[in-house]
Image (cartoon, rainbow, N blue to C red; front, side):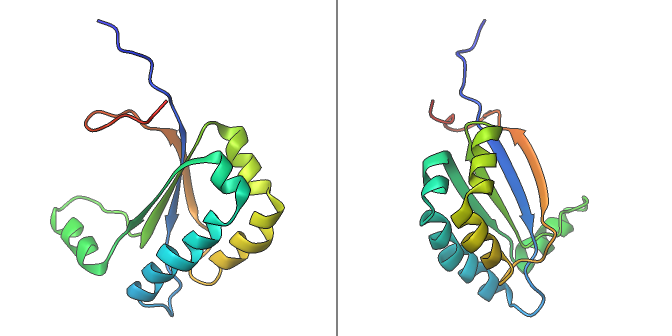
Length: 131
């Protein structure tokens, strides 16, 4: 049995920790609104990005995860940016507006360095990514 070809998007996973002086609520609110709006105002980002997800962790969800008894990731959030290929991500990352506005804005709420992972999703349950 063969399966139809599925479009494979490159997924850039950015694991984030908030600045120490921010509460979880302040971090989450800023990231979800101000920073996301700034990203969406960048033409290269909106033209080249296929999906942008934010995963917000709370102290409560982290504690629940720890209660399962497995090792856990201790990040405050994870951003997922889906692009067609590595060239698209390089184009976003090199965009002058991105470098002048979005990158400096990260320093207002995110600790650096950011942990990064690149890979591809294989949908097992749920809707597959559009082609």
